[in-house]
Image (cartoon, rainbow, N blue to C red; front, side, top):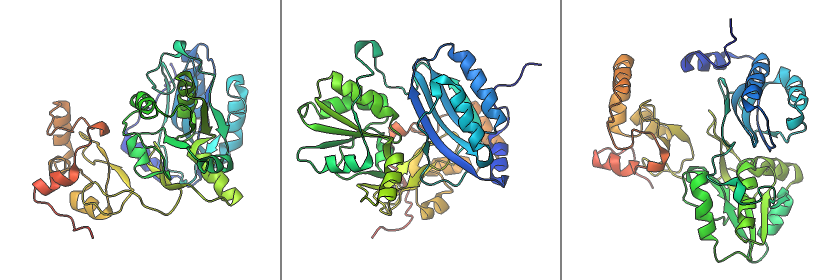
Length: 357
């Protein structure tokens, strides 16, 4: 019988099993731009060997390299590192261990092949992807920020920078990395002679972005080595002042890890200070938005009254609606880029959670 090289269990069951685990997991991310041959065969081999170690997470493999976010049982950590080093392409890869980790970041293993490890929309044949910017440590990044004329640019999506970012950084209003690159080029078109500092979560987006900026004529391009994750650890270890404020958004069940105590964003439904991202509890919507505890209680974890009415239906009725692909409101395709004004929607329905002060 052929081995199952993918998960076949229901999400609810997997999450329940995760919560019942009585051992610690270590959440980490890593990437490497490296030429990989026979990606499909590599994908199957990686899946089999990681499943044996009870590793959960999300891994993308492409001809250009690997991009991974995973959680590893602590007891299997040494075997996991040995496994990575057994692949010459991944030997001594830089592992970025999560800043805040409750061990419940992922509940299953996904290993997929992709055309690219990050969707950037670029034609890599038109520029030198290896001509990247200078990598800066946390101390060097802080020092460079203080130099006259320096421009700091957040290479993440709007919902990431909304809850945390570097002080004074340019925050492009983009929904995807693919959308952001041309936007950044346009925003900085008159600053090609300035010192440019790029940063992202773990560094992977800056690798491609810095090479592209250099191709576009920017003369002094720099990037935060290891991204916000390494920055936070270095700041704490070296007693530096964090120039990053708020939360670092992460693409797993945690939704974020706190870097500093400041809350710089507000609940999308009532306007109170809040930086907790959630997905709408209506599975036909799943909109990503910021919701405080009061709004969550009032709205049952949903984004609008329409979603709440669907969420409160018996589960079988919800499934019938989903199978019929009935769109109940404009944002039910659950794309965050649509960004409905939830506060105005609730006000239009006559719903007031509480008054902001």
